Image (cartoon, rainbow, N blue to C red; front, side, top):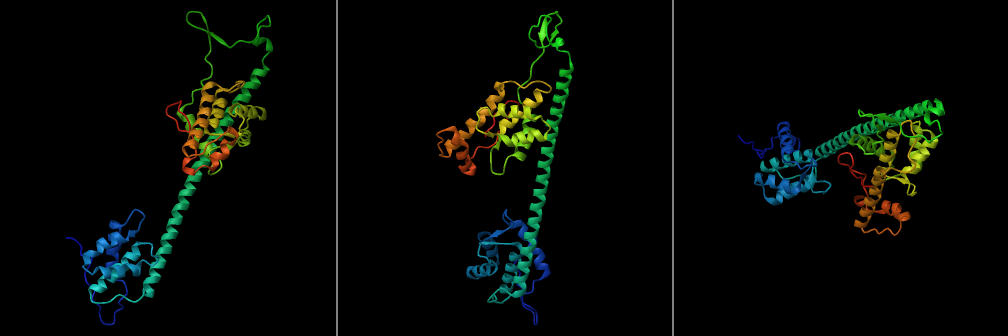
Length: 338
């Protein structure tokens, strides 16, 4: 059987007209949950559509709304809805609206609004704490990975240095050659070189680290920031500087997302060995895609960049929705948007 939300509330002798009835309050709170908007409020249009079921004249319903919508924002909370329903039932019982909001009901609405605000703030604080913990954990994991790679590289370099130099050259003083192994047919085969294809797991790791390093609202970090991070991961200073030169070969002084991807890939693939003199083409393409995608976003926003030196200054002045976003990848060789 459907609930009748609009039963007249007739005044009893000596009773306080504006004291809420507990039974009605509980029913109204439950019903509010079924008709509220997504933002936990009820609009004027939704309230009027529902309240017409009381068969009160539209003018009285409008006066009731004006009484409970104290801030005139055309939205009411659940407790303002409870008060409005109490006013409607009293009017159906033969009473008139009070000239102003009764003090006890005004205090109740204010108290409940404060409680709702405090609850929302607590939820937001808890969510921010969880996000901060996740970012810190991701940064620690990335730092640990780079520190391990640096430690292994240093150990292998030390072991290599301790070997007699004659072991690495031919008796006739011929230059060193890559290590070889024999195939089943007895032919000499070169050992496989580094794999410069970036895997999805490496992208995820770099993403967490990049978001922890870049300043808020920016899409890049400075070369010095990358160098400081590498030094914190126990990367030798000379090696850290060489890494920075490789991934910032266009010398604009900024490292975008794919620049950090390239730096971490170089660390992982060159454990214990020398870094390449030039950036491998696979990694160079990723960095250039960052630049091209960022420029494309700026052109779409109407900002024309006449030269590359002005590029990043224009990037930070572009509307936030048109700023280049950090890269997204598919599979192991996707492209990033700076």
